[in-house]
Image (cartoon, rainbow, N blue to C red; front, top):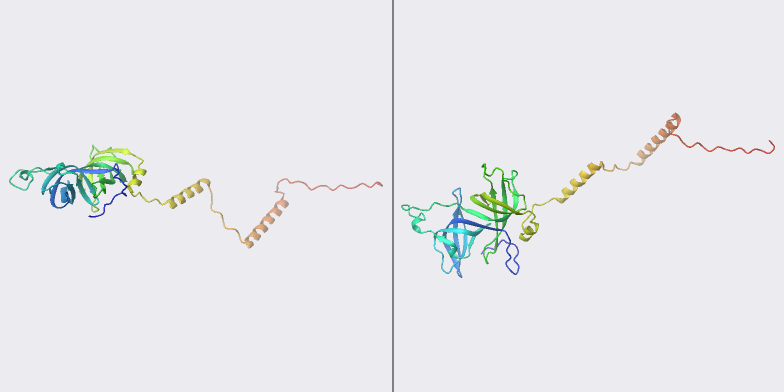
Length: 283
């Protein structure tokens, strides 16, 4: 089996608050069994009519039969697409008479695939009408924590017009209807409920080892220094003058001082001390 993509495991299974589950019509196919644990080919649909294939892990004493099942609150990870059911009794089998295999018999219409969970917002669109949430969900002892990522979108209707997504880094709880999947295997879902739980989730992001956007601190420091210099009116120091330039400058300054003394433009100065004459006793 493939190695699990999850945070580092400790001595016990710690439960993080992020999770994702779906309610859907699952079509189960062939299975591989080992010690009452069955890995079954499973698929479910989305609103755009496409079908999404994955693996379902389930514990059961007997192999699970093929067919259509109603699944409620089944844990799911999206990268890779994998589902987990703790017991076969959590699935409701749809009889063949109404599962659609017989065209002459009535069948149940396909229901929408509903996703619900708790995750962290990792990106938000410019108009704040869509966001991408990510987290880890616990499947079973074999696969443990697996990654999920889903894009949540508000419908362009009057009902959802005043609503906007939470800022990046917010822990949110949501319910949404899965509509499609993009080229990066990320589900897109229309929001039916979105609630903010916590804004400061740095410790949770570190515990889940969720990557944060890279920050160019060197550029920030340069911008801060430039802004401070502009505010204080400081300029870069000019290079020291050469000897020839310095002598020329001092000569010009001396001429300017002489000219100032001659023209009388200089300010008041202390007069020179007077010389006292000694009077001879004879005079």
